[in-house]
Amino acid sequence: MKPLLLLALGLAATAVAKEPKDASLFTASDLDPALVLPPPPARDSAQAMAELAELRTAERTRTAAQAAAAKAEGEIKDASIFAAAIGPGFDLARLPATARLMAMVRATEKAVTARGKDEFRRPRPWVIDPRLATCKRSEGEPLSSYPSGHTTSAYAYAGTLARLFPDRAAPILARAAGYAETRITCEQHFRSDVTAGEALGLLVAERLSGKPAFATAYAEAAAELRANRLIP
Image 1: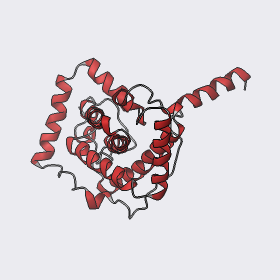
Image 2: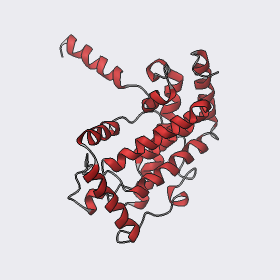
Image 3: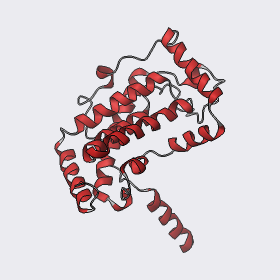
């Protein structure tokens, strides 16, 4: 391979590595989605029909720009989505300890969410109604609607960041809510998938605080943020 191509690939890899990869801090007994979430609505229930109607309404009323923006948001799966809510200086590429803390959140949340999806196996909206013009179809995951992974990750991040930045808690949580709403705009999830993701994400954040490894990483991130004058 040519040297210039190798350099380009290396730079590209560096550009996307905002959060280092990490392993989940939870065992299966730390947080079981089936024990903390209600089952999703039965397929033919009134609630399920109302949730499907909401998606059809979203499709009729969204603009092309709104659909494109929601789709683009869905491609971002790290804590950089909160940069505007937190303010200048929140750049994970320049905050390695904070990036590592967020990686712990992401790895743990992802494992918990995957277990929930496996336990509930709710069909995705486009499986129920193939006519839906969803932004993106994960054809290999037709039974992965509940809970919403994007929503769970957003609220797991938000719950942790709201503790680090208590004066910015309101805009941080509002940002999580806006990010979660793109799952409806894009017809990726039903409403109860989103509300379940909100509850599960906040539970992940709360229970992580009891893990010694997380507490250590949290203290290191807080020290880093203070050193960079992002928190008092």
